[in-house]
Image 1 (cartoon, rainbow, N blue to C red):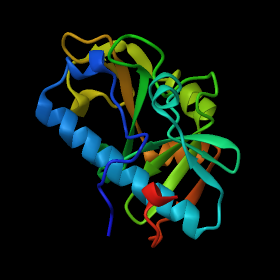
Image 2 (spheres, rainbow, N blue to C red; image 1 turned 120 degrees about the vertical axis):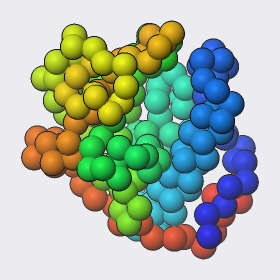
Image 3 (cartoon, one colour; image 1 turned 30 degrees about the vertical axis):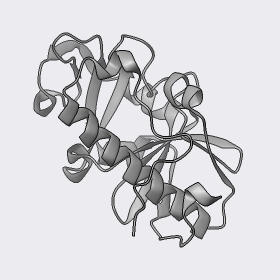
Image 4 (cartoon, rainbow, N blue to C red; image 1 turned 60 degrees about the vertical axis):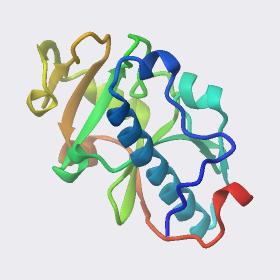
Length: 188
């Protein structure tokens, strides 16, 4: 059973970013993120990995949710794009700042939740692939964003979607099987 109790360093969205989304969207995003993080934590613990939750500043500024065996990770909860065999990449966040997909190694890996496993991908490789997309061809809806730039109305974000197939063939990656761990994260 996934615990949805708040953690001491709970998942955060910046106050400025919250103002750009509906309350329903923010709650849905927080829930998916929290569930994904709990599942990632459980999977790492079950695999015998050393894992530490980061604080609010690292989460928001450095896109880092966890440090696993000394390596920084951002965890992406299960989204519709993943269910469709695609991956959504954030180049710029809603404020126009550096998104989590970047070439700065912040964080080193992105862990995408696929239900029965996590796909852990080297961030620099994702960014390099994103730069091959036509990001100047801008669309206004995520369903049209395959290999194109996607910006939401009244926001400064820039995203694109790519096929999972391309990630598996061009990016350094590894799989972490999902496995439940019986000790709640907030007690550790």
